[in-house]
Length: 282
Image (cartoon, rainbow, N blue to C red; front, side, top):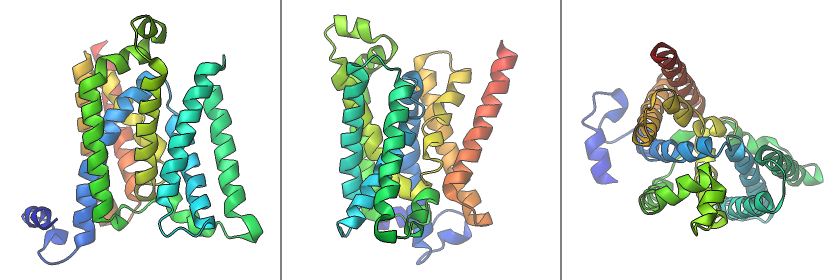
């Protein structure tokens, strides 16, 4: 991290002064790692028409944290990761074994997860207020070891995209055709769902459970307005997520607002701009 701190200290900001404000420097690095993750995963979420899937995963992760707290674990995040990954695998299984639409299955799992989380959190007249920080998030509390974990996840996602992009995309657009070509669609979707589960769980305490779904929808939705091919679609989604992440972090620091909400608002502006460009183009 010392190399990162040395580079950041070259920036012309008051918080970039040497020897202090490490929380802001950590937050900047976290944004640079989280934003590409959301930009990449957003394209698959929008293509698969699973916009509310990340919301359901957030609810399941909250339930996992509540279970971890109930069990007295020192870091309940790992319990949340395990619960969210299991939740995503079960969702994929039920989705393929039933005739229900994806949004219906998501609604069933989401409502069940949030009800279970609230039930566990309020058992024995427990207070729900200790979980309020999860709803809003605080990226200034990010720890270097969690950033390293996110960086590892980013590398894994990039390798997955490079090695299996065609299979993932075909499975998303035309599952039947993908199956006829020997692609294990259910396994492709399981890996994809597990990736989203891990990213949502690890990052929700920083960006906030209330807005994390929008971070997985808006980048690709905006990029789709102006992209002419698949390469532009992914590029615009990633660049838009990074730009909104940096702008949102700066805004949250100087006005004292939530970073997750600030990033979301910039992504909404990005969507509005690209939508107006799309109208002109048409």
